[in-house]
Length: 323
Image 1 (tube, rainbow, N blue to C red):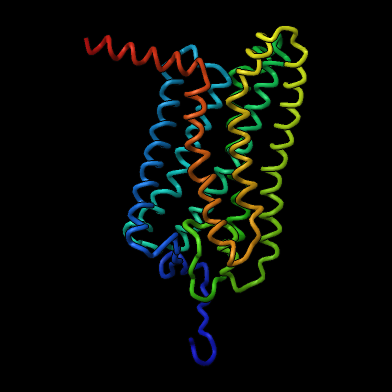
Image 2: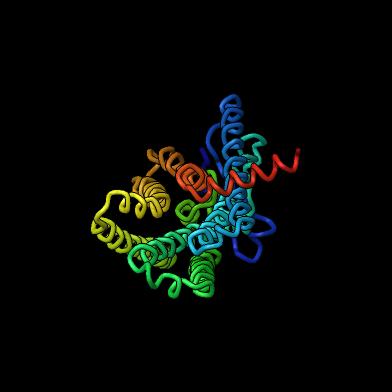
């Protein structure tokens, strides 16, 4: 296709942000299919943003929801809004307007926020599991152990730790040089496609990325597993069936979120690498890009009595105001 020696474009970081762009290939070149995908993903995006904003507002304006569990839930909902807005708007432009180019600086920024927010979600889910452990297994000491300053420090530490860890990988990525056609066979800037475009040794970058991603996914998962092992053991010791049901209902929503989040991560990153599985990898990437953020408001609105009561109170106030 290209006679003679293939042409290589080696890009230095100094001029990447102004003169060089990557091309995100997205999903399909069929116009009719793209229109369908655009409408579907736009509806999902609206549902994710409106649902998570609703949870944030309900918690902020209802004093009986000012508890540690809902404080962490607000953090999670805010994260889902930011996480989805980092990927879906650009993906919608790729689909409907075929604006597939993205600057190197923009690509690295998208990866940085994607990685940081995904890691932060892991830690927040672990913190929420720890909160449920204290509420059920250490109920007498819960008000003393889970104070407002403690909640704030746990949440802030989760955010700062993950953004700093991901910054290490991002700095190493920014020092790479890129060659070839500059096409990313994905709908956003993920780590593996970016490394694949590099024409220099990426072993250090990949090792650091593997170490940091393992730390922020496996360690929280182990903490969640230990917490829920203790919770289940404590619930089984409750003599009455009503008491066991009430205790389990306080953590069932969070346990469902953990299952969905880690299930989608496993489904995505256990897909074998290679061109034959790239379409499957894109499809599985949609699971944690769309399914997890959309599940958060659905699960907590359908399965949580406190959220139900807050919504009823807001609706009754609104109807009374209209009268």
